[in-house]
Length: 379
Image (cartoon, rainbow, N blue to C red; front, side):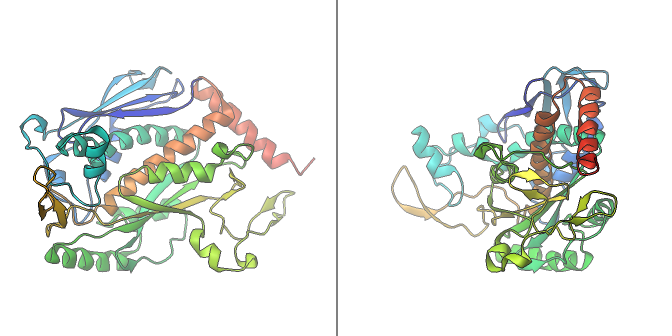
């Protein structure tokens, strides 16, 4: 079985976004509606801009499926753009601070940022969500659940997220911010309204939690094997993400070791358990059997209604930066993207551990690994 890989293509206002997912085992039941549910969630969220009212994302599965069952060959996914206007849009020569505009213009030697921003746009994440939804479907078939949700927006923080993951998801679905805390949701609404009134934008912090992972996924022998590093890289590759923490993360640097590390105690059945999960389910670059918990910080969007200063690259004059259609806050929708990229990375390490060309093989080998972990200290 080839390694699980995702490649995307397409521009923000081009004909479509495209994803190629290679390495999906044969025999996985997969329907477009499963992927569409993630695409719909990606378009929801208080503070969204006009583009989300134009598009109604649905996936077309062009290859890799017979009926509703994966073949083991690459999956080709297409998400059409209704707003297909790229050939009619004007040139952009007033680069926007905080965007890829100016660095990309310098990289490719062009005075038109349109050539850069069409691909750098977060619209590209529709393809990554489609590919990540496939990975989430695979994990679900193996008894592993992944959920993303908003825990901070601007200066509004939700209460610590506790409880069974299914209950967290139920509460998240009741919120216009994909936040499990109803009181925080009210305060977030007010914060977005105030930012919209002042022509400003807001960022936030997203938490992603995965339940059902066995110990020993990832690795320590080489730096690139370490799962925490892989998850951090995957999350920081999402547009506008600026920082990642695993478990207690940055707070650990301000605490003594006795308040950071998760003690190991007998579970009463010949095995072990952890009374706490401060490490976020990862120790030494590998899963330890607890829930994997990661957070990612999203900066406020750089497209403001009250434009920031810039320079017209054709005249050298100081001007207001170009203004593009934008959200006041995209963090609720970005929580779906974060969920999907984490699901994809976790599916990769599961398949690296198990191998197997079919879902049946993967399932058999994963269950054998689970049993071996359970029985290790009981011999």
